[in-house]
Length: 201
Image (spheres, rainbow, N blue to C red):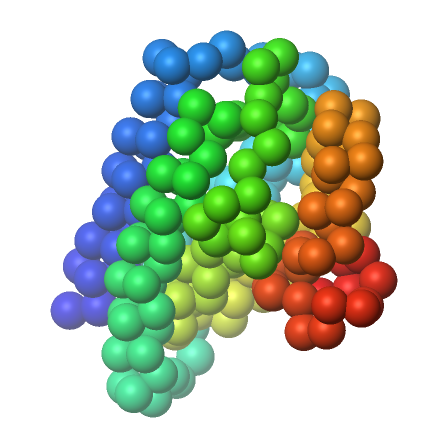
């Protein structure tokens, strides 16, 4: 049963994301992926293939991924399902807040606006937070150490390479406004103490 629930959650998230991204492309300018550079494109492609390929294989042909499976209590699998459903709703909330500023890259659009409403009131990169949470939920539902490990690697790559480059682009675009925004928000989770350094959360 969980293999079909995995597909339902994944396809729901991709449908919601695709809808908002299509609207953003119609309503505003776009940024070509190639402008990120070949290294970024290669890393993005490899991680996407590992994560989504692994998840789809667990759902469609679980026998192919038996080597990556481990025993997960049913309670945790149902918790993963609940988390996945909440994440689909969160994806809609985040992308609705971004509106036409949704971009496929870490670079800013020509007419990019600084969004500080909705979930962006507390977190600078809630889309990454929801994406990682979705992967965690799917990994629990699938009972896959491979998907969970790939999620940890994705978090490390986001934290070390993607987010710093994206924030550098936003600082170049918005200057002191973004610097002030950084001081009152956390990167991936809300800031615990308002006096902590930028990015501490």
